[in-house]
Structure formats: C-alpha cells, structure tokens
Amino acid sequence: MLYMTNIIIHNDDHHATPTHTKIHLCFKTSMSLNMASMKASITNSLLLIFIICGMVSCIDKTPTHKEKLDLQELAKTQPEQHGGEIKPGDIQITNPLNAQWVTDGRSIFDVKCQSCHKLTDEKLVGPGWKGVTKKREPHWIMNMITNVDMMLEKDPVAQRLLEECLVRMPNQNLTKDEARQVLEFMRKNDGEQ
Image: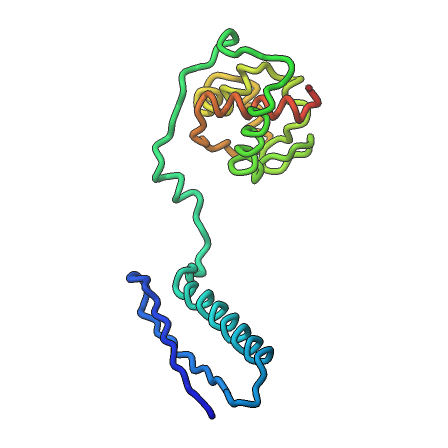
C-alpha cells in the first residue's frame, strides 16, 4: 500500500512576500515492514520537515542589499554630544584598575576606536595607543575623547597630532563615564594592574 500525505507550511511574516511550500511525503506501509524501519522512516521524515521549516522561516529575513554601510551618514543622524571641559581634579584614578571599566572600555574601543587606532605605538589613521597614559594626563586624554573641537582649538599637542595624522578625530559621542572606561582600558593596555 502507498499513502500520500500533503503538508503545507505557511510563512506568517506579514512584511515578507507570502511563501507557501508544499512538501509531499510518501509513506510506504505494508504488513512486511517491521517496526524499526518504520520508526527510522518517521524519524527521517520529521527531521526533514524540521530542516525545511527552519529554512522557510529564514526566507526574506536576511538583508538583500549589496550597498556598503555608510558610517559617516549614520553619525550625522546622531546629534553630537560635547561634554564640558574636564579638569585635572574631575578624574579619580584608582589602583588597582576597575576590571569592569577595563572590559567596558575594551568594548567601546572595539566598536568606536579600533578602525583608527592600534593598541601598539604604530600609527594607523590616528596615533597608536601604546604609552599614551604615560605621556599624557588623564584629563587631557578624556578631553580628547569627549571634546575634540575644544582640544583642536586650544591645545598645541592636539594641533600637532592633527598635523601629523592629517585627519581630524571625529566626535564619537561618548559620555564622560564612557570616556573614563576607555581611559581605564588604555591604562591596562599600558601595563597597569
């Protein structure tokens, strides 16, 4: 005996084009078919159904555009944040390092800094970070992170770095707390414990 079974899978994503997939499964049964082979056949059929359901659920949910993501354009939609000038007494340096700030600072570096800065002393687009916390005061580093425009207007070291690198550091819209986390990561990068 041969039985034919139709199973229809619907894609319920209302934003995508309707997708209907028809799967025809044939189950062969007869008195001579033993129970073990029947279980194997059903197991294989169910596995196939789950795989196909998984593939159908992914239809039209992945981006299909080929254009590059324009980070400059995305940055324009966010209003620039400029904190007030950070003074030497505004920052409290702790020993040992705050492990959570180091981790958070590393995450910020990975997303917003590493495309222009290396963790060595080698220049990429901007200067390398190795040894920065030994050469610059913490308030200088944090002002450079949060107040680029002010630093380029007033600070001769920042102006010299602009001349060397030939690219103005963009405002990354980091808060004072985020800049402090980046500073903590920089201290860790320079070997502080």
